Image 1 (cartoon, rainbow, N blue to C red):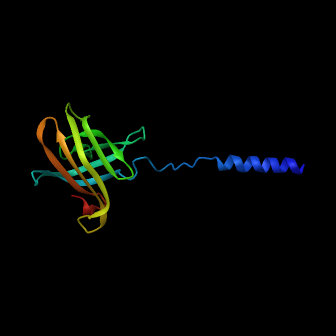
Image 2 (cartoon, helix red, strand yellow; image 1 turned 120 degrees about the vertical axis):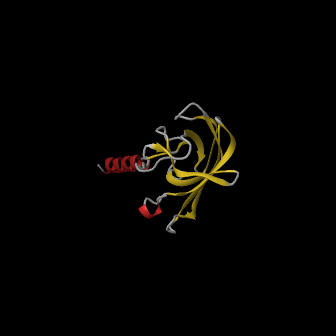
Length: 157
């Protein structure tokens, strides 16, 4: 009887030690996903301001969407594309990605999320986003810079 008890105890502890942990609230893109208030610059001059979103794909892999649709409308250029991200360095990029909103391609370089590197309009410390972008329907390279959205009305642009 004692041997059977020991055997069962060993089996029980073996089974629970092999359990995988699962966090139902996290995705692979959790460190780079956010809503952002951004400014688009051409040659250092501000052209547009608005919101963009970065979020995971349903595949939950090493890619994110970069999407300038906020509240049902485009705010800076009418683009939505996929980009590869590096969760360790908080960087992202893509070359000639298909724009899912209309027939152009989008190239994003130097994409970077900088934790706690910015302040909102009211002074709340938040993350910062930066990237360079090229659209195939308009020659030139634009810079997009912004801050993480706090979701407080006072901080909304």
